[in-house]
Every structure is written in C-alpha cells, then in structure tokens.
Image (cartoon, rainbow, N blue to C red; front, side):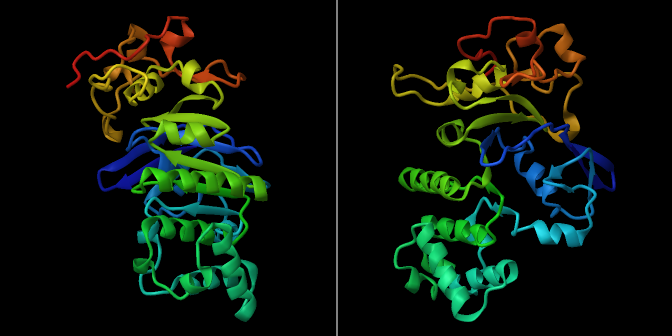
Amino acid sequence: MRVSIRSPKGETEIVRGIDLDVGRGEILGLVGESGCGKSITWLTIMRVLGKQVATSGSVTFGRHELLGAEERVMASLRGRHIAMIGQDATASLNPIKTIGFQLVETLRHHQGFDGTTARAQAKRLLDQVRVPAADRRLGQYPHELSGGTNQRVAIAIALAGTPDLLIADEPTTALDVTVQAQILDLLREIRKETGMSMVLISHDLGVVRETSDRIAVMYAGRIVEIAPAEGFWMNASHPYTRGLLDAAPDIDEPIGRLRAIPGSVPAPNAIPAGCAFQDRCSLKQGICMSSVPQLEPPLASHRSACHAVAAGEKRPASMSLENSA
C-alpha cells in the first residue's frame, strides 16, 4: 500500500510501500519515531482521511478490498469490525455528553440495543475494562474522570461493536507508568477473552515488546524490520532498530549519557534516493545511496531491509554517536 497527500504543489508520498499482515488473534506492535507514518497507515486503511489522500495497492480485510470499497461498505465495517482507539482519549470523547450517552449511542448504532438493554451493556463494558463504580461513571462527563479512566472508557467504546480488529494508537500516551502497565495488561486480557486481533502503535519499543506477538519497525513510510517479539531485543539487526533499542536507558548499565541516534526522520518531500536511513547510519555503503533495500529473506519470520545486513556485515554493538549532540 502507498499513500500520498495532495496539495496545490502536487502529491507527497507519505507511506512508501507497506507489505504487512495481521493474523487472527494476533497482537502486532508497530513502532517508530514520530513522523514515520504509523498512524496515517491505519487511518488510511479505515478510510477516514478525506479526498486529499491518494492511495494505491491493496488492503484486504476478510473478503473485503478496503481501498476500493464504497463508503456504505466502509461504514458497515468501521466500529463493528475494525475499531480504533485514538492517541488522546480525553480529546476523542465528547466533552458535552456523558460517558453513558456515548457508550449507549455506540451500542445502538453497532448492536441495535436500546433503552434498558443498552444501558446494561454499557455498564458491562465499563466493568470489562475495570472502571470502578461503573453505574456512577455512566452519568459523569469526561472532564470529571482521570486520564487513565478516560482511556478505559475509550477502550470500552471501541469494544462496543465487538470488533475483529482493534487498532490501539499510542493507547498509553500521557499516562503514568503504573497506569500504562494496567492499560497494557487490560488489552492483553481482552485479546485473550475475545480472540480479536490487535495493532498496537507506539514509539516505545518497551511497550510493544511486552505486549505483542510480532513487532514491525517503521521508518520514513516503510517497514524496515519485522520479527517475532520473543528474542526481538537480542536479535534485531537493522541499524535503525538497534538505535532505538540502544537509546533506551538500561538499569543494569553504568550511569552515563544515553546513546542517541544522530539526526532526525527526513520530511516526506526530502527523503533521499536509496535507503531513507542512510544519513543517520554508521553502516552506510555506496549501494545505500542508490538502491532501496527490501525486506529479506522474503519468507522468513524475521526480515530486515538493510543492504549491510543482507551482505552479512556484523551489526555494531551500539549505534555510532558520530555527529550526535
């Protein structure tokens, strides 16, 4: 799949060729820095970005082809079969409607419930996501709840349609560490109870490592590495993935400066020819400046898009700090 944004100056490609699958009941973690295209990939799949977006390729969900589907088909899938939790739960909730109203409205639309049945189901959903005093919360407004409780309410609304696929976009943003752990535990429990598939989008490798079955690393609109979560920390091979891992503090290491990746993600209209990571990479070779690396080996469970890795060059123990601040 490819995604471009139209403007008076022409089209700018944001997602530059994603080849990805999510299995039934699987949790797929998608990580990368801000601006890598993680969120826009799934907003495009849900077809909620408007007419300024141009897409190519194919996205299949069950028997449906999503990129060419009519709006009535997408409307029947959104919420009911594919649901999404936004980055900021408090902002995604309606500030002038009670929690109960928003849950009941969703249940009526997707499940056909009304009256007493809808309210009972709304309370059941709040109980499912471990919201205390659910009866009282139904009559409250989002500003009366904590960030963690609002996040649980957003999850409850997403679950109201009993979706087959849940897209959780930074579901622990702005939450303290204890609440983060509770939300991630909750998502794992819900997957176990319902059997739904899940995509967990994050910039934090530690979050997806503890929650996901597989991890895909995204950079500048492409997947640069994908592998099973088990052993991912030790077996990651792409220089960008290693840089993300090395940038995380380790309590077992001596106190010192964190190892930062030099530079920043290039703007979509300034991505260099060849490998998009070349200007930040300590393993850069001549081929990196002219040829876009593909995920290799093609059919393996662990694939990496790096010319140096494909050539068998030994990855560094840590990223080079050359030119870093």
